[in-house]
Image (tube, rainbow, N blue to C red; front, side):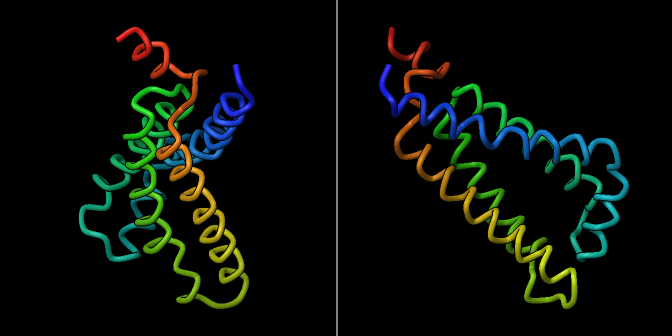
Length: 136
């Protein structure tokens, strides 16, 4: 194994805690998320809340395990950009909410960069993709 394989594994695993915690929060109080989405003016907020939770956990697990890694990274980029622009719109709020939304916005920009690097470089040898496809 090379250092890049460990770095890619670390990068892939580093996103899991955030998305896992976010998924648990969404599932534990899907009503609050539905209400927040409705307040933002989204259509079908209950369906969107379920899709968001499922997308977060499936994308994060796929990335962490290194299975369909490039597809997972691409999907997480799209998801994160959409959430960042529509939910963490710090330019629309003032006071303490401004700082919280700005931090989340900037954090998400960093995650988009991580997803892009993993999507371009690939998952490395410490991944299910490598185990499955190296034999092919």
